[in-house]
Image (tube, rainbow, N blue to C red):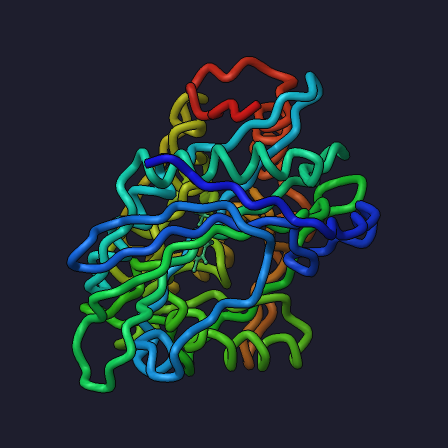
Length: 354
Ligand SMILES: Cc1ncc(COP(=O)(O)O)c(C=O)c1O
């Protein structure tokens, strides 16, 4: 499918990299493509960034038929722009779409959209180390119909936002609240899909954790709150002795692209990684015995996020020396070197755009 390109006549002033934050600014253009049961995917286009026109009866507005993705375009030290494992995000988009009874664009349509948008917006890809152009592919049910059934028309679009370095000059750690009242997702639900509804259900717990002075929550299972799931909007890893443990993909947690990548990197360093159910009691016991060396989250936004403290109503658990552990630091450095093109891409994870 040929992509029609309509350029903006009023480019926006670009913010300074110190102002970026996360998702505060949007670039000049967006990619859009429509789907209907009769015509399939059609009319791919790059247009000036603009509000959507939606029927007030659209499925997304009533029954939350909405999924999305998140990936970054990095500008390497050689000036080239590269995406990190974009096909993994497509696989997850496809799985999320299936769970919410929609169809994702096929791989060529998805890749051509990213290629054309990032090429059009190359001036928006920041240069400073730690910054990136964050891409947000989104798929929504647009058919206007109030019966509860899957929509037969969707819109897929991609917007882009320059994002700042998550940390200042060096990696920093966060405090996490162990959540045992609210749940993010239940077995049989949509926890493994990157669906807007999962984020709606997470807001209250995150807000209450913030009020207590914690950056995010450690989600536990919805049934008994006895097993660890993930941390805020990241997957979670524990270094106990010399073993790395992370919750298995049981259907209630998001299969993170960084989770998969970190596991592969750790195994390439000959570290033992266990993907299995992780009882909270085991983590607290390891802490008591002095064996819990590190806890860290992984995700596209922060890449690697060391945890310095886990908190509950009864107790505060300081992790390691209460700062950034050596394994988290080594992983963070690995991904910085890779994404900014300072080391060879031996895994074949980077996709060059231009
Ligand atoms: C709930 C949740 N878990 C885990 C992740 C990490 O996924 P990824 O590594 O693909 O960014 C994210 C972020 O996308 C998330 O929102």
